[in-house]
Image (cartoon, rainbow, N blue to C red; front, side):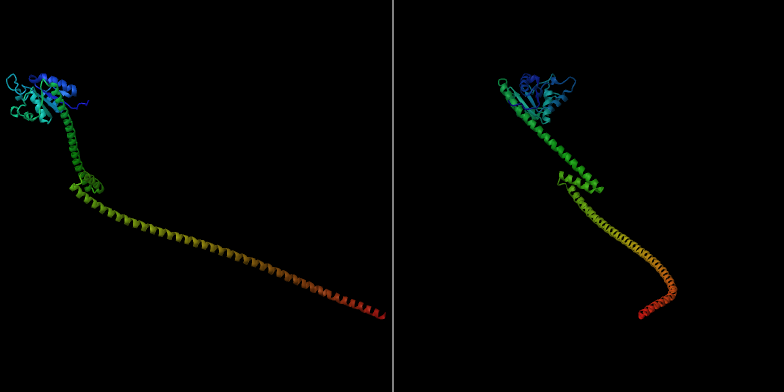
Length: 355
């Protein structure tokens, strides 16, 4: 069995006209749709509340209003003999007028063959009821007629639900559109502030967001073009500045490198010259020391030689004198020796001769 369509049903009836049918129809509808979905009697209104306000609220909360119209519904009179429908405080009039005014589906249920009231016979606020398609309910075919009413209510509740969904969708679309318009206005205002403060990147971001929401926004397009042109100018200036700074930095680095290279070369040259000078001075010092040493050694050797020569000369002189002296001594002795030898030889010869 298919689950009943969800929704709220308001049963409007006049007790003096259709109280018997109202109870039976309420029972059938509550059995099918559930008691919580049906509102019928003003007796349910708590004491002390404004019944007109409560009825307005209940009607506003319902999805379908079922108006039970019997033979006395149109012309029933109050105690003063006036037709109740002509009284603005009449419950039935308040209920149906509120539903018609709010665009709620109103289904007239014509009881026991009664005809639909003419618009001319209805008070202001109820005249549109005459144009509503009705459902007929008779005693002899009540259950069949009630089933038909239930089917019509199912369709009405389904349509009401679809209408709610559609209205909710439209409300959401309107709210979305309102938020969109508000957001566009906020983005445009933020972009204007950013432009005034020369926050070009932020302005571009806000304008792009704006054009995503509304691509054809003329102010957004024009301002974005201005901002992008300004950003190109700023970028060109930035690139030129960076180029100048880079060239200056490269020049400074080159000059520093050249200066450091020159300083290094000068330092190395100075160190080399100092080293060469030290080596030269050392060599000269060592040469001078060597020359002095050699000179001293030569002088020492010369003095030694001179001393030796002097000693040798003195020795020779001494030897000569000694020799001379000895010669002198030897001369006499030699003469004597020679004479002696001569005498010996002469003697020997004489001896030999005589022999």
